[in-house]
Each structure stands twice: as structure tokens, then as C-alpha cells.
Length: 120
Image (cartoon, rainbow, N blue to C red; front, side, top):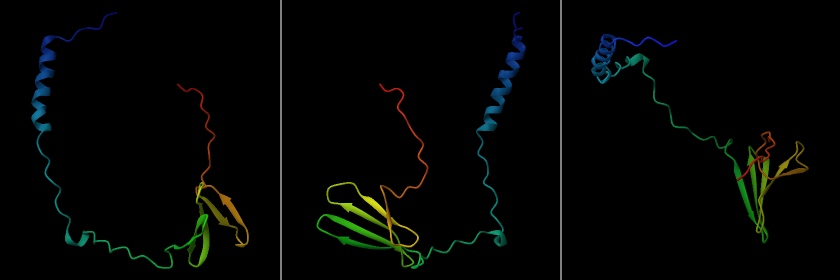
């Protein structure tokens, strides 16, 4: 069953309405009025760094490697070891600070297994 076609008068009326609306779309919108003085947002103060929160990095250069010890608040957080010939790795201390866990990165996110199914 075929759809009825609109009459030429309806098409002309819709076209005229669309053309009449175009100038209204192109008119600039006035800016909003300024806020009253009592509701104005004050400027934020500059961020002042707390020296206790800043990490303290000690760099030790040896013949075959570079060791970077990172402490925050005097507590050892991790050690980054960069061998002269090799990939850097990290040593993370346990809660007692007596044993270290070796990691390839500081990222602790969950790794989703990824397999290549198709390649070309």
C-alpha cells in the first residue's frame, strides 16, 4: 500500500515556515546579567604546598645502577632501581619495612587478559 503524497500547498507552507525561522536562529543571544556582589565567587587562593606532603627523593648513583628512594612524611614508600643496561623496576616495602616486593611498575590496577584473535 502506497503512502499518500503531500499536496504542493503543504510542501510550500512547510518550506515558507522553515525559511521564516532561519533569521531567528542566527540572531545573537544576549549575555546573562552579572551576578550581584554578595553572590560573586571569591578568587581561590594560590595552592601552598605542604612540605610534609611533598615526596622526598634521594638519588644514589652507582656504577651499574641508579637508585631513587622516595619518602613521604619520613616513611619509605618505594625504591626505583634503574640498571645501566635493563628495564627499571620498583621495590615496595611491606608493612614492617623489612622485606621488599619487586614490581615492574607502580600500577596496581586489575589486568584484563587480552588475546589477539585476528591480525592482518
